[in-house]
Structure formats: structure tokens, C-alpha cells
Amino acid sequence: MVVGSDSKVKIRKLRKGDAKKAGQFRERNIAWMWKNYLMGVYPKEAYAFEVWHWSEASLMERLKDPEFFGIMAECEGEICGILAGMVYGKSGFAMVNWIAVAPEHQHEGIGIKLMSAMEEHVAKRGCHKVSLHTLPALVPAVRLYMKFGLLPEAFLRQQWWGADFILMSKWIGKYRKH
Image (cartoon, rainbow, N blue to C red; front, top):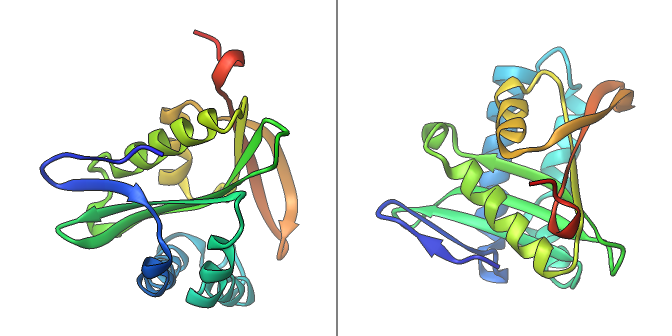
């Protein structure tokens, strides 16, 4: 796992002691995303599920799983971004379950730093491909993913909660095209 910093942002592994603040961070960020991009696209019931699914208790359980990984960005000692995902055994495949950057820190390169740390981590774990699901309405997120090299692989009509999603993927490791 990459652990790095510059004058403003420190990237490090998510730890058990971070679970409470990480859960609160996720709750604030899903509320912001829902209000700014997803209202009318992603049902309120789905929003409530997302908050529960990434709560402190849920994160504590996930952190026990050796397949789970979490990467955190800190700005002046506060969480300003988180990426969480899973490596699926020795399959060579990893999935980013969620990534969020605090609204006040977007467009500062934090998302790319989190994605780069994730790619290094999953490559070391033997992965050749990483994927994620996103909602088409999250245009800034789709732009970030494409900037990072993830490409749309599938359009998933009414995948979850009746909402459309895009499956985006990137080949890494020995299969990566240079």
C-alpha cells in the first residue's frame, strides 16, 4: 500500500481506529452526492442503505476481512478522501466499492492519488484488472475514472434500486497496455 504525502495531503491505509470518522465521512459525502447529483435518480431508500452499508460497524467488520482494503487521504489531520475495495482472492480481480473526496477538496488531485495508491496495492496483490460501478449522473466521478484510465465496459440498466449504472474497468499489471 502506498503511503505518501505532500505538503497538504497524506495518503495512508485505513485502520480500525478510523472507522467512526470514516463512517461519518461517508454519510456526509453520500448526502452531498445525493443532493447535488442523485436526487431523482437514486432513490432515498438506496441512500439510506448506502449510509448503513458503510457505517462504523460495517467498516469494522470489513477491516477484519483480508480481502478488503481501504485507503484514506488526510488533509491537515482530517479525512478528505477515502477509497474502499476488495481483492477477490487469487483471481487477479479487484473491485473498488466506493471512493469519495470531500466536496471542499475536490479538484485538488486527491481522487487520482487515492486511485494510484489503490492500483499499486492491487497490483502487488497480483491483480490484472480493477473495476467499479458508478451512476452515470455522477459526471465528475466518471471524468475522474476516465482520467485515471478506467473505461466503460457495460451499461447496467436498472442495476440497483432501479437506477442505471456503468461498469468501468482498467487492466493493470502484466496485461496493461503501454
